[in-house]
Amino acid sequence: MNKAASLRFGEKSIELPLIEGSENELGINIKDLRAKTGLITVDPGYKNTGSCESAITFLDGEKGILRYRGYDIESLAQDADFLEVAYLLIFGELPTKEQLEKFLNDIKEESLVNEDLKKILESFPSTAHPMGVLSSLTSALTSFNPSSVNVDSEEEMYKAIVRIMGKLPVLVAWVFRKKEGLPLKYGDYSLGYVENIARMMFRKPNKEYIPNPVVDAALNKLLILHADHEQNCSTSTVRIVGSSHAGLFASISAGISALWGPLHGGANQAVVEMLEAIREDGGDIKHYMQRAKDKSDPFRLMGFGHRVYKNFDPRARIIKKAADEVLNDLGIDDPVLEIAKKLEEEALRDPYFVDRKLYPNVDFYSGIIYRAMGISTETFTVMFALGRLPGWIAQWREMRLNKEPIGRPRQIYVGENHRPFVPINRR
Image (cartoon, rainbow, N blue to C red; front, side):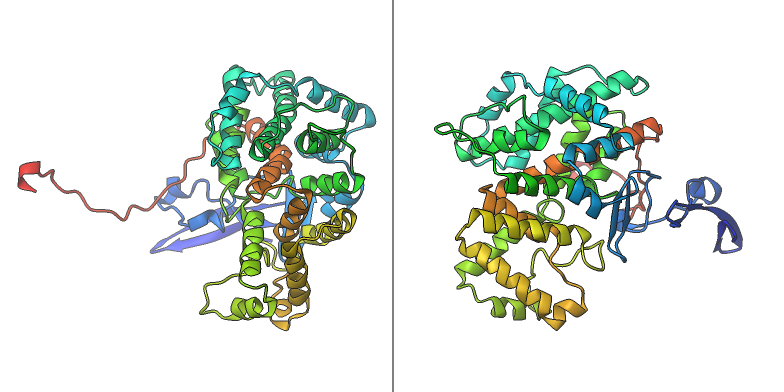
């Protein structure tokens, strides 16, 4: 096969080399296009533009495939611990027992946060959105760890990784507990990574904390399913901020801000807000299903379909089972969750949705689980950020180790042509 593409414009023609990925994906390398021709490409939203070559995550939206470092998301969610997956994403291979124990212990050693951060947290008003608070606190970590990371030093790189892996769960728990009016606590050194997250978040000050294995298992799966998702908005943000040689904390903080948006990580919050609106309007599921089919109606079913997956979201198949287990175990009588179950049942058998492959996605089920756990709607995206942390770290590390150039997109200027300045008394 010819490993080049031809581009013709006017009387000129040039050859552009092709790049072939390990899963037979093909891309046209336009790195030298502007230098050779004076042309650039225009691709709003970068929907057809590959910003990098990455060995971390493979995603095939047409076939509903998601793999981390070659491992199917189904097998990882079924058999792996979240910290194993984090190690896999960041370092490229599943850890041995000894490597995993060391990784966990090193993270625990870094799980204390400077007490002055509590003062920063307490300065936020009660109306502050948890994602804004988390982004600010993550950025503030840089103040307490000001030295930059020498990416050529494996020791310094590893230290930065275990530091953010240790401290972010504490910040997440603090953000959640402040929103709930609970005292800010640290975890238990004897627990595993996910079990400790659950304890830090859900422990009440007036009674003994008893772990719930069903909740812990669901939380483990949710974090794994959200751990990475190729070059999405927040991941691309982490890479482009890091390409300026900004530190890991600053880059992660930028990723949190990008994740905040309702078109990205805020989608599971939008799902529950939609369900609450349906309940307040009487809970007529069939009425809202008909509205969703009406193209002239602005109403849209949140949590159905996916802009990447043109088939079933593979993560949704996994988390649907976990959602059923959590709801059954906790025995929660919540009219909003009842509406969610009925909406799911209707969508999975309605020909309009089935033919268009508008199946419930991971955001639909994750919102249901988090609500059942007692996590406030505004805090859903904070949990998403916690799961996405190892993916962001892996992408940042890969970008820095590959010595990728600073991100600097081009543009086509469509503003005014050159014009003379007019003094204010003549305007």
